[in-house]
Image 1 (tube, protein in one colour):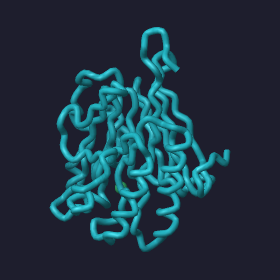
Image 2 (cartoon, helix red, strand yellow; image 1 turned 180 degrees about the vertical axis):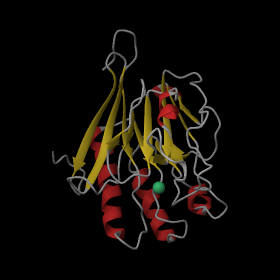
Image 3 (cartoon, rainbow, N blue to C red; image 1 turned 60 degrees about the horizontal axis):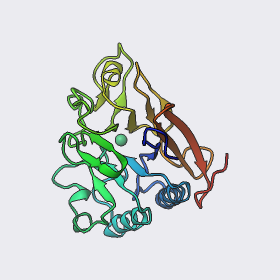
Image 4 (cartoon, rainbow, N blue to C red; image 1 turned 45 degrees about the horizontal axis):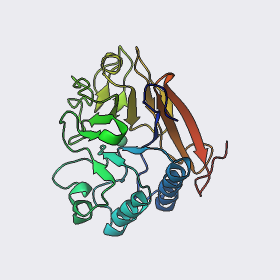
Length: 247
Ligand SMILES: [Mn+2]
């Protein structure tokens, strides 16, 4: 896999909006997380991204929190969580539970806007995002996103609502096309919508992964390859309940 210049592709699995602990489909959400983790293991991706609304609300049971952490621990590589609006990073956030203070070492939380928020030197990748603290129209996940700092690869994570260029600005956590085009990154990983959507603008490859259980299988996720020669390549995956590809 190593190319002549020493750089190798970095592979990332992108999911979001699992909504663990929801009244609507608690078992389906658990199966979906399990399937995505299983796929991350079997495909042997480098990084797993969970772009918000991992939990349906901040009052989920401790057992649900522990389930999520136990699942993510089965993936040996970095699992990166950006809080969304359902699991927002306010003072009552699920991410303040003791379980998260004692979380597995491979589970990383983006809870500040430091640049870079996370840097994995062995992969030469940095990940930046702005966690949702208060979901309202004034919160703009990509406003003035800082530029690349030092790594070869840069992924930006954002949880919010994509707006058409001339939309009236009344939706909460809006993401505008010009903000996407101005984001300095190799991939923009989006969450908040329940279906896979390509919202790339300019040179920026930007996708909503959608909720993992709305696709053809129990689990749907995006496989993102950051390739030294071919650039960013995105492949939708549809998984069965044990994380195997079904299409
Ligand atoms: Mn959301």
